[in-house]
Length: 358
Image 1 (cartoon, rainbow, N blue to C red):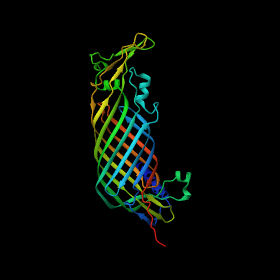
Image 2 (tube, rainbow, N blue to C red):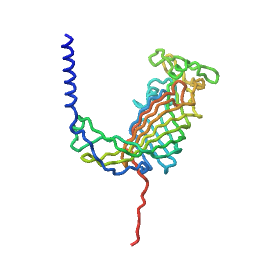
Image 3 (cartoon, rainbow, N blue to C red):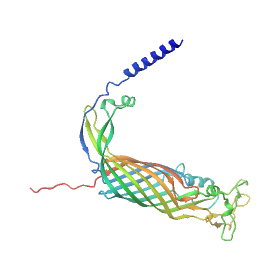
Image 4 (cartoon, rainbow, N blue to C red):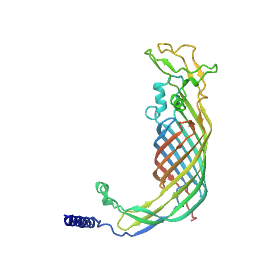
């Protein structure tokens, strides 16, 4: 019995080796190439991108929408960045504002989410190193289903990489509506801590139009003006080669990883404006009062980690991601962001041509 088992295992191993040998690709042969250019310092100076979609999981207000951003490289010394974001609409894209329109018990108007950021990165060290890049081998005959069903071959090509160590400094301004009931619950408080100048607390319950007791659900607006300070590292490749028997290969990726400390010296919340209701849910004339939002705790310090990528092209696209804790209401500062820009227009801003006298 043992002999039969050993013979069976040997046969399986022989078959496996045979199948593996038959699975070797016939097109897996060495390729030759000719370098077209390898110039990581010859990149566009200005990139302007439209942001058709971003999504942000922010504890203060989950939101999504559109925006724009621009990046300008000033020689090898520094680069400037600016961006803005705004929600598309209330429904689906501005969670807190949409919730306020359906559940708010107070008279405060729910603010639209707006975000503005601007800053610069000073290049402490800007240098070039030898590296390599992986390029996939492609032929025009691989179009359609043939390319989709194919595991592409790749080749490592020596190239130069430009590295930038930078110090970042900038400003951030944003405003939004937010759910006060959830913030109070997260901080283990309730409506009663919000009081008028006379010390009257915000009610816990009220009557709705059906004559049923429901919880008083307060919403307010939050506005932040802050700074960020941090560091970054960038990798820039700008190489193109001409492969023998394959299409041209290009690697022009510009990628930046960064880490920032966030500080918001100005972080304000609107006081709650509430009108008492009668047993039929109707507003009682003359009972409108302002309730101080001061008991709600805020956090003015935070941090973030981020990644930005774009391509050195006249017409391309870019992407970005961030995660961290943004200065906001305490216990509601976490956020994660994904964004895509398309199209992104790039230019080196060099329009000078040589002239000769006749």
